[in-house]
Length: 221
Image 1 (spheres, rainbow, N blue to C red):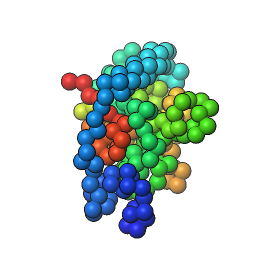
Image 2 (cartoon, rainbow, N blue to C red):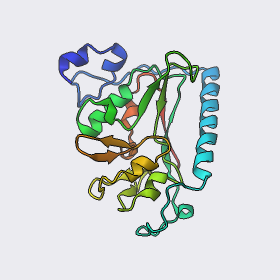
Image 3 (tube, helix red, strand yellow):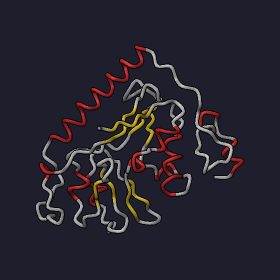
Image 4 (tube, helix red, strand yellow):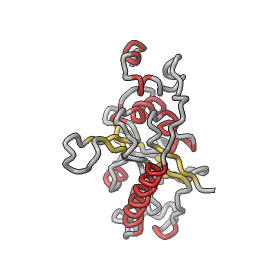
């Protein structure tokens, strides 16, 4: 993306670009004031999301292959993630800054389709009461993507416990892509590679530069 095209972006997006990608860009300095009602609404959304995730991860994994014993880990022995992203769809403005920053920081190119976080739209409110809703990797405890890999290419980040694809081991078989029930494994068709959210090693850029503070980074202990 050229400097001129970045300058033509809406203010909410242009001001949120990392400095290494745009010399004059600075993250928003204004701190959003969160009202009690908004905070309660956010907590309610997270509780509902947590219940949905719990239902998913507690169910028997559909993609576990008993023959995949190279890790020596069965579904009940897979360590839980110690960090994850939480999104607030009531705060999301659909600017897609998260997608742009994600693709820039990981792939060096402004291509939202390669982002590890997605913004989905429903302008007619046919499926939800919101126009835009961010979707992020759940870092599932009983991760189907991890259990489906036959090449030991899904590894656990030592700092966050995030389920991460090791590009050196990945054979581009697509098993993790097919296994993820949330559709959060990304396929780069040009390079024929697969990737997913790695939480940026504990410093997620989407959280850092979201102009609406709609993404939170939660880390245990």
